[in-house]
Each structure stands twice: as structure tokens, then as C-alpha cells.
Length: 228
Image (tube, rainbow, N blue to C red; front, top):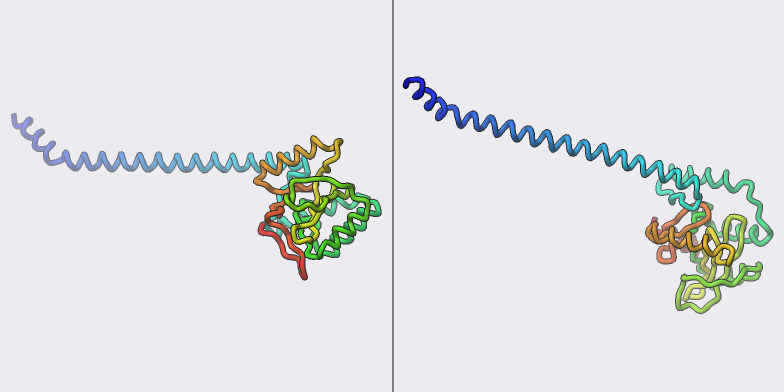
């Protein structure tokens, strides 16, 4: 009987403390499980990010148009070196050399040009008239709908320059990986699909660019970059 009373008293006296200890242990276990879950999730995210990065590198090696637009000074320098190596043995015809001379005189960097950045030149259409006289081929595109001025493409070794006039009669141009000829029609459709899949970025022969018709590089008295 004394044992039974002692047991009951002990349960009444120590039960709350034991319950608190149990609650504390339970909370600790939940916190530990939560931390482990967060850690495992972070490790999985890192592995996924790494895999995505590796797949991106493979994709770039297989298709130069997939190179991303450089966002930092270090990326820009690497891309400059890559383009310099890729273009050093490319020989242009007379029309191509003339067009490239014009582009460099305007101050457009090779990275922007070969990534297909959209450039508007506040020149009253002088560049348009000059390039049209170089033997450019008439073509149509989805750019500047509502502007009736004929658009053209000028073929270079690395791709084509698409150019035309804005509603304000100024020249615009962008380098494209493939032209609109019947021989390149499927490749051009492929570039359009990349353009859509990559958030509307332009697809040049050496990479992509966020500098589009709606976010162009503008050249007036000085070059004004797009919002990248």
C-alpha cells in the first residue's frame, strides 16, 4: 500500500517534469529533422545547379548560338577571347568587310554584334541606304510591323545581317545565325524556337543577347547600351 501511494505521488510530482522533458526531446527531434531536410534539399539543389551548368556547357560546345550573354567583366573578357579565336580565320568578302568596318566605326562591340544584339542608329537611314547598295537581298521578318520600308539581309561568313528602317526612318540592324533563304528555312525556324525558349532573347551566330527590338542598343552621338 505504501508502495502504491508512493508511486501515485511520484507520478503526480514528477509527471509534469517528465512530460516537459519528452516535449523538449520531441521538439529537438523535429528541429533536427527539419535541419537535415533543409541540408539535403540544399545539396540536391547544388547538384541540380551543377548538372544544369554542365549541360549548358555541353550545349554551348554543340551549338555556338547557345552561348549566354556576358553579365560580368570577367565573363565579358572570356567571351571577347573566345570570339577573337573563333573569328581570326574568317575571311569576309568586300561587302562583308565594308559592313564590319561600318559597325566598328559605330563602336558596336563584337560581343554584341555576334550575339545578335539589336542596334538602332539615329542616322536618318544613311546606313540602311549604304548597305542596300552592297548587294543585300530583300526579305521579310517579324520586326517593325507596320513599317512598310523593305528589309534586307546581307550575308557574311558567320551569318547574315538583317537590317531595315524604324518608324522614325532611322537604320536598325541585328546579326542572325541563319538567313531566311529556302536552304536555311529549317535552321531559321530552329533559331526562332530558341528565341522563344530563352525568354525572347535574340539568337546570333555566336550566342544570345537580351538586346532586342524592344530593348535595343541605340547609337546617336554616342553608343547607349541596352538593359542587360
